[in-house]
Image (cartoon, rainbow, N blue to C red; front, side, top):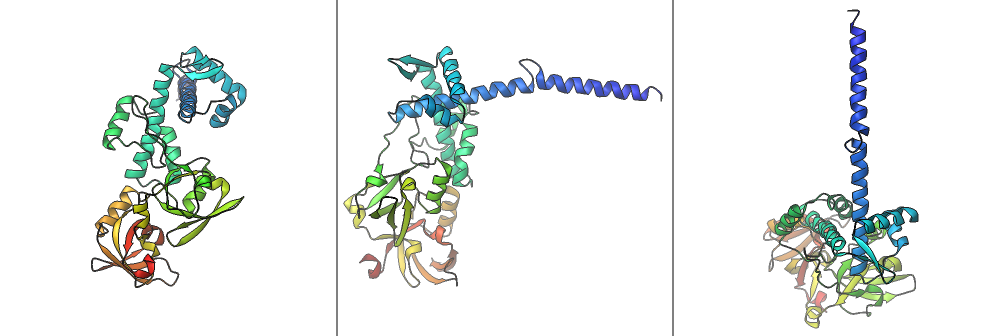
Length: 342
């Protein structure tokens, strides 16, 4: 028994040495792997920044890179020097450019990010505010084979849920259509084609206003610090910095003449025939609405509202179903009431 304390001490010492080795072993320890992973993420985030600037036809800057990565200017300069040594970036005519190898890697990272956001939007229950953060993690983990399997599963989409073009494996992208909402004509049917998801507080304001790509609206009034828009029967006020994060395009006249409104616009007793479900309705909720009978041509009538006005009970295919206002807003209907068509 007198040897037991010695044995325990030896075991404790051995465990301490083993844990320390696992943490700090050169090149193999957890700390070395963590540093290597961090360097990889920063390098790929830098390449993604440079490629995104290229897509926007906007020259990249050291300060822009530092702000994107939340690092100091010297740290950003050090990363660029490292990328240059690796043959991923180069200077041409005093301008920083991606080499073919750098562009290929940047395309893969940006493609992974936007495809993962598309996946989160279409096939999961993640909130919109979580898409970007989740995609930031996965973009560095997906292998090329994982990436192409994901693209095939999603049927090779060309835009992410915010309206940003998804590059194909060769780096080709669909055009970014649209004009800034701030310059759009007044009282003209418009459709949102892109909603910027950064910075997050601004994106949160757009989500709180119920705006998403594919939504139709009109600009009612434009002032120096804010603007008023009309979505269906509702009018909403957007601060100018928030409105600047929206791109829109004019709607064709044929679409403008269609008496379409949102189901949430119907008053009690009014009816509408379903035209479709708005693009902002995500896959899981879309399936639920379709299972409830919300299909093109179905006539829906607003029967009665709760004391607070939300939710509202609707008669759909003989059944009474309660929908919250934000759910009903996703259902586009053609008005069957003259009062709505006037």
